[in-house]
Image 1 (spheres, rainbow, N blue to C red):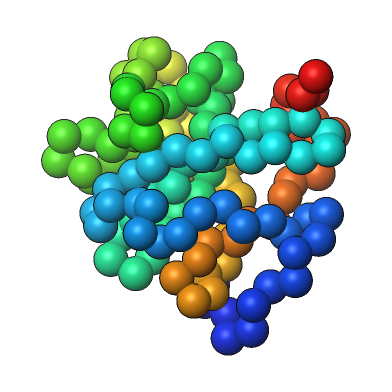
Image 2 (image 1 turned 45 degrees about the vertical axis):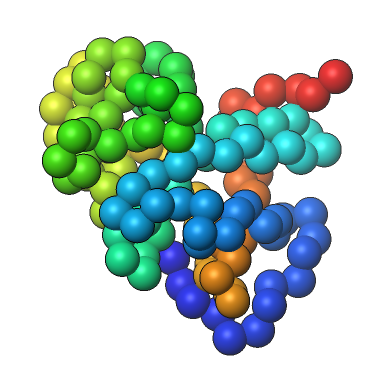
Length: 134
């Protein structure tokens, strides 16, 4: 995550994801991103002024991670948790420290903050598992 001094140009690879205020301090939220190639879920964790953005998909079987809509963290807010099998991931790098996918990682998305708005670089569609929007 980087903070930029110039507003990113919106194009086919950079999109606005949300406002910083859409993510509670020391909390998380989820967002659906729609592209011409399909759509995918994201999760954003906010730690003070830092954000961490990942594809909302467990590396074990691909299910969404949120326990309830937008809730991705353990009770003590120290880890991301998968609602399906309880796998635990480090917030800072998405690395799975416990569970059936231990040793693998969540897919991180490159993010930028400008004027309290969060922008992401869209991943390349091939191999990213986008779902076609009809």
